[in-house]
Length: 145
Image (cartoon, rainbow, N blue to C red; front, top):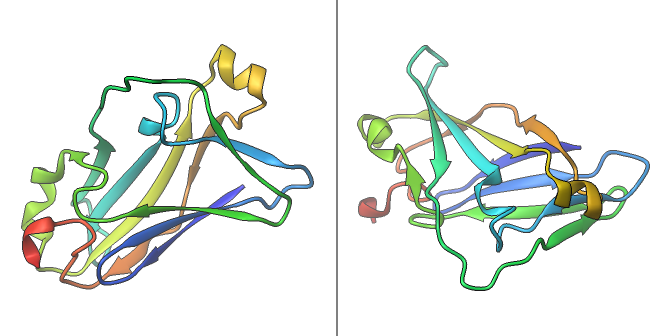
């Protein structure tokens, strides 16, 4: 598995690619197993020690079950990030970067669980390469429109 970040003016796409020889399952983000699996690292450009990790704000699910996405061999699945979706814990720590070029890296982290084993879901962490995002970062900061 590999993940790639594609940055545009208003959105950031995290593309999960199945580079293996068998089908790949990841948790669907519409349930509690998958919601918090996506994270972002944000840094000033050029890459420096000024680096921050953003995690998705927790949310409650009124109906919940361990749903997954199956990615065929050679296939992809895209997760789109746009302003306020999802909402990020720690976004205030990167507010000083809103008008500067920044670097972004996505992380998909799926911890071990009985459900992951039962449903054959990938377990582990995968990170993308760093990608530059020129300002304005409308995909991250909702007040720049």
